[in-house]
Length: 301
Image (cartoon, rainbow, N blue to C red; front, side):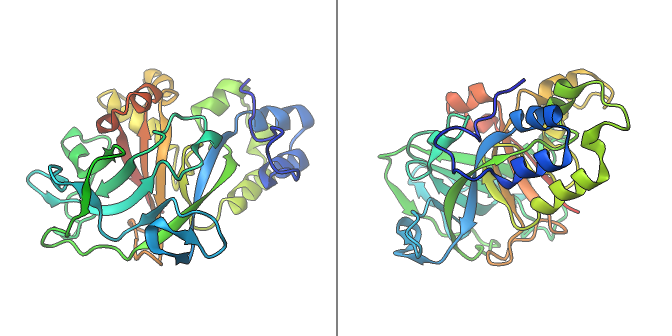
């Protein structure tokens, strides 16, 4: 069983609502085992700022990044393009030095900047789609890492790309629970008959209600709109074998969430029908700063 970090001594005195929910709805032993599967994350929260993207939020929390606007890129870095389709849109950037990444269980860079780009259909009216199942489309989503100390300048958007409105972000550490159909859940509780407490309708409804609202996130468990994003990425990485192939579930356990960006009215971002964008990466690639090996998927309702 994975040990939970969410009840560590440095955490807030009051239990997180996810812990309370589990202890109210599940038998004691199962509740603690489910809590043990939780992983720490950074929830990215929108805020009015003082001093722009590098200042502080109105409430004093440091700004750690932003949605939209224009990216700052090195002079020798080309704006990401999906060859044969067109330029990608700039989605978000994160200041790694400002992120409280010590709260996470993934090895984010201690400094530098992460920039996220996605082919959102602006230049082709949504004709081409980026999918983990189509290797030819993988160039339609990119993560660029700019190390600290590299000279950068704001880059104008290419023709046909309308930048998203800029929205500053702060970060707050919080635990995340795995999607109930995630392979890590089956690994902990197998066998799971139809009457298993985790399938209880009241419990599932309570978990769903707690996850409502706009959710931008770094690390932790992804919050899928449809099904577990880890198996989507795993199947694509394995070359799209049949869904019954047991390797998919094994491979899914090798991927962790890097970033999740939700649809957001303030940033004028709508991913399909109220969907979300997800970038996942293997821990060894993250530690080696091989962000070119990150995998992307997206879901909508």
